[in-house]
Length: 310
Image (cartoon, rainbow, N blue to C red):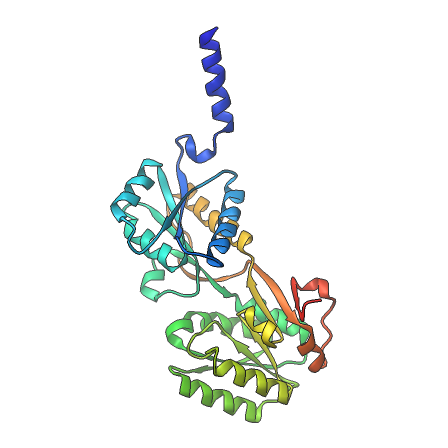
């Protein structure tokens, strides 16, 4: 009878324990140990990872002083085969640990090309194809998209943007700016000659050319005065007056990262490598700005967030 009870216990344990605890190849998550709002964002991404995997995954919060040797031993003891690295610190730590482990990265804006070349990295920058499609839906008459960018951050994204613009029948004018002064000059030139019926301005996630304290107020004021539509890769800009933005759906992003990791577990090797734009997005629109521009978004239900808040 005692033997029967023991067997029953272990049978129940096998059915109730998460998949990562039963000895099979595992996926683990490495992410920065930092406060809000980032901690909540990482929680949502991990929620998506676990939903896709169908079980809990081992989570390893890391800091700059994390002992790489201890972390490596912990991952190997859990039979980890693929690490999903979140954030810049998570990616840096995971690649230092790797030693036979595969790494999938997400939750970063961009990384140097030499670092991204060897592994799949899903950026937080929305896919230009999705941005341009949304823009054309709001402004069918638009013909030209202008963007000012720092090639040190966004050269990879502009290559995708050129293809996306061509697919939408748009002309993309991409101006390289390596510093604040040259960025301001390009914006001033744009607003001096822009046609509000055909020209739109795109603000990428770029700390050089979309500097928050000087360039953004300039762009918002000029665009309002001249009736020029501006869309952004940063959702916070919509609250301040930009027409619309796409931003990460963190749970869906987690599912995409888990899908890449599962593909590696199945094939034993990487598929696509390098920087990939964010396709798991939600949308935000500023209705006051839309009204000012004479636009009528097709129902608030087509956007996940609206401003001013209703």
